[in-house]
Image (cartoon, rainbow, N blue to C red; front, side, top):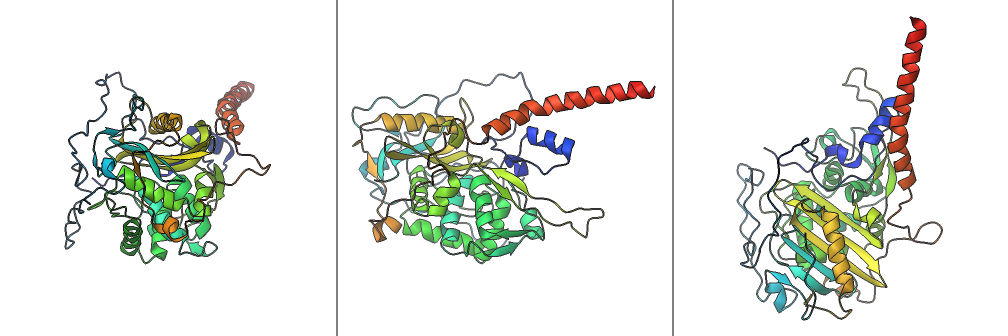
Length: 435
């Protein structure tokens, strides 16, 4: 079975939007979705108590856990990727070579209810690593690898160039934002779809401009190598699992920090909602009509629910499970948190990230167990600060707890059912008159 990322186009749409669409014939309204797989239906079956995975014996020192299906089997004629070499000493410092929980001397215990098999908290600006669990253990990145694709694309593509959507874009596996054949999209809009809504169709359209999937993957791997993210090997532009796919909590922090040198990346991970173009009717489909544009929303729930959230990237595949990278700011400090092979139990990944961020912010400002490598933009231009998300139009930062469109979301959720009820009562009354 082909491994799929969760949600398809539903990753950017919710039931309230469907209600409005059905009643008014309007375009689908995208609001942030949860970062986990859809429920398979109600069940009274009890699950065993949650246990945090133990990594003390370094089970993923050389490669990710065994896949659960055939998604990583090489295509006929393609070679099986060899294991990536394990650097010695560990990149980032001696303690980064440990595989269990690593905290500064004298630090309090790490938060409970963290299901991520590997995680790390680091300082976005200084590169200090504050706390970690199996930082160089190798796991699958899922859509968080789109951070590497964004680095390549934002530094090489003309953002104002108009790209015509193809059927191949529309047919791509996994999460899709809704690109249609014949649609006209600027590269800036494709980047919005890639970063905010994790669109694999957007990843396909971007990769096509980089020379195709193989060429795009090669460029992504070149970026990882240049940053000394040596646990990382992309196999697909989108993050769908493929032969040899790998990253680590440490490497994901490195990639995210590099991406934050690009102002548009910092802007897009902090953007809550934008309008996305539609596409024309397909002449091959009888009766098909033009498909109007629609809003898309950022799928990172931390952005809406954590004070000081800067933004980040979510991911999920059957093999990778939940993956996550995000940043937040408090009292002048900006921290990054990464999660790999997490689950939605006992709390959702963004909530696990929030607890780890709280833990990091509570540590001494000089706490350190390791360091991110000074490579890439920091090494070439050490005086250039990392990009910050732009302020709102009034000059202030948005309150993450009450986002700008929170009122509209609540009104839709409440008003939709009320409108349905009113229409049903009206119809019933009309039928009585006809009798």
